[in-house]
Image 1 (cartoon, rainbow, N blue to C red):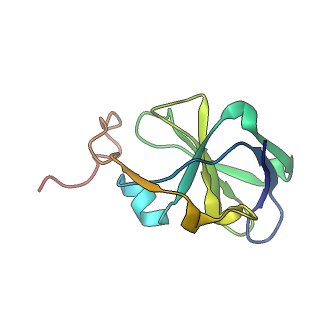
Image 2 (cartoon, helix red, strand yellow):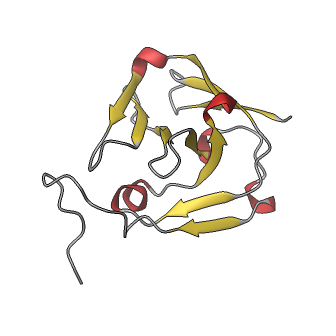
Length: 127
């Protein structure tokens, strides 16, 4: 199985992904659009933080089910626990070494229509 080394920009947070990457995904939810995310979906057993776990910042909103992790030093989004598949992570492929992104299909996923459950964040305005 392939192993990909991953890190944030400042190299404080380092991790490995042991997975065959078969596709990349985008998401049209308000958060993914703003962070311009291109992700690879991996099972939780296939991702391990090797350095800097204490430097990870957690961002949660809406239902709180998705867990978005950023480096608290450089601010880079490294990965998130998925709301629709909580035993999987979406990994920022731009943080991974050796991924041939041109060789992988990109699938657009729909997140904008997910239920908004937190009244503190009403979601995007109705069109």
